Amino acid sequence: MLQLLKDYNEVLPNEISKKPLFSEVLVCHIDESPIFNLDDSDDHDVILNSIEQIAQNYNYPFIGLRIDDIYSPDYTSSGAYNKVLELNAKISQQETSTKKKLHLLLDGVSKLTAKEDLVWHLKQCLLINTARKNRCTKLLLGDCSTRLSIKIISFTSKGRGFSLPLDISGLNPWFGDVAIVRPMKDTLSKEIGIYNKFQGFETTIIKSLTTMMPPKASIDRLTEEFVVKLERDFPSTVSTISRTAAKLTPSELIDSDNHCVICLMLVKSLNDITSLHFYFPFFF
Image (cartoon, rainbow, N blue to C red; front, side, top):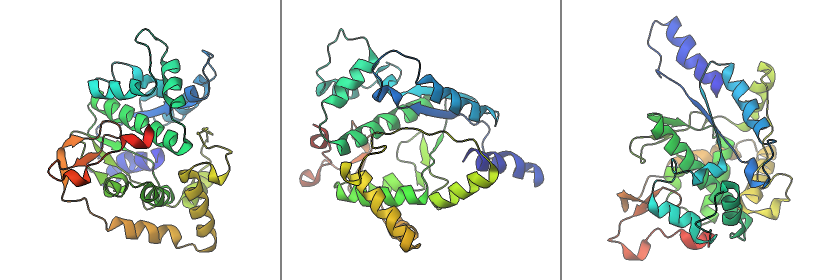
């Protein structure tokens, strides 16, 4: 995505004598290794340093964050969000270690599926607040068509159909000052792999909660196994899922003034009491 962005923002404008699309580009990566390492070792810095080196090849400023930075006052200015982060973990007010707080929070979530969702919501909160701090108007995510197809099925299985049009859209303006853009939403993961191989790009392996886990470890992991295997025998699987879901439109019941405390997505109108957007029981 960085290479394509550089070509589109710098090379093409020079060839056709037009201004770049973006006046400034910042690269942000959130390191998830504190989830697996409770000690204070510096092993997790290896990943951040590796990603930073890749970003420097494109002369873009780099912002390296860790997942436990969610407990920093810079990212949890909302009092409601702070309460959610401490509710299930029963974190002591005197606890100062952000890693310890993060582990207590995740330990309070029994299901791996719920842990995956919670980690993603924490990352999304960090990304959006980082974009706002740096006065960025657009947040570009690297979700490809294969990843979005997996999300479509897994989100539907978890009862998140209401927010599905917002979660998978190529342009999500519902956060107000920061619009989420997915420029690679029409690209297959296999196409990305072939492109990276032919270009000789440096790669970094990033561990997740379900790395080396069996397919039935979580809903997302099971869906990934299902979609990838089906795509192998029926190459139109991913494109069919993506095109079908692209026809979805946000509900008219959306209340644009209120957001879910955890996932930050829009909720249903309070006038429709029977269809409120309750997501908390999924975690606790």
